[in-house]
Amino acid sequence: MEFLKKIAQRLLLVIQFILVFLFILFEEIIWEGLAEPIYRKIESLHITQRVETVLQGLNSYILLVLFMVLLLGVEGAGLLAGFFFVKGYILFGLLLYIAKIPIAGFTFWVFKVSKKKLLHFTWFNWAYKKLMAGIEWLKDREIYQTSRKMTTTIKVKFLALKQKYFSKESRFITEIKSFYQYIKNFKNRKNND
Image 1 (cartoon, rainbow, N blue to C red):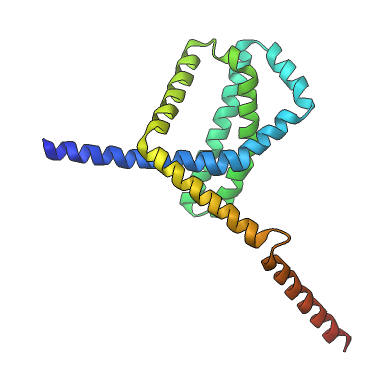
Image 2 (spheres, helix red, strand yellow):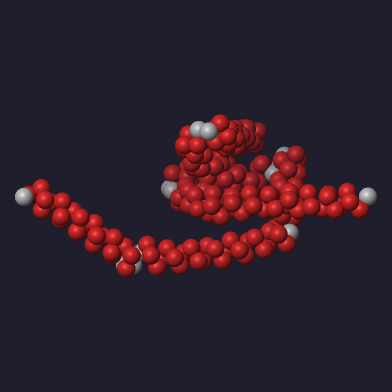
């Protein structure tokens, strides 16, 4: 019995690690790097004020259908992108995944605007609370907190490296530009001779 208990604990640890890894990957790369800037851009546009007024004036059921269609479309595109990755169509899967990100940003915005109406549906409210509780549970895990610290450390080191070598004023970029100009001038001198 003790043996089965140890296997169950290790299996739970592996599942937690996979969930934490996927969550951090989503949060750091996809949300903060891509979707959140798109979400902020959508939110800052003046046209969204008109759309927001229209959304707030919609019937709750129509709003629910609109949100669910957007959400299922985004999730379906993500699954389809994964399918293409598995089939070996990496570029097509990547393009499909990148194409779904603006729609995901818009879907988050629609949820934010219509959250009160959507949470009036008992089942939707229940699912939302369970999802948020699941995310909080995941964030409370030691493996998440350790992984988050590691990710933050790596991110800080990466940004320092990027600043040091790839900023416009860095010596590395200056050397690359200088070398490029040398090659370009050399090629032009050769063509003139």
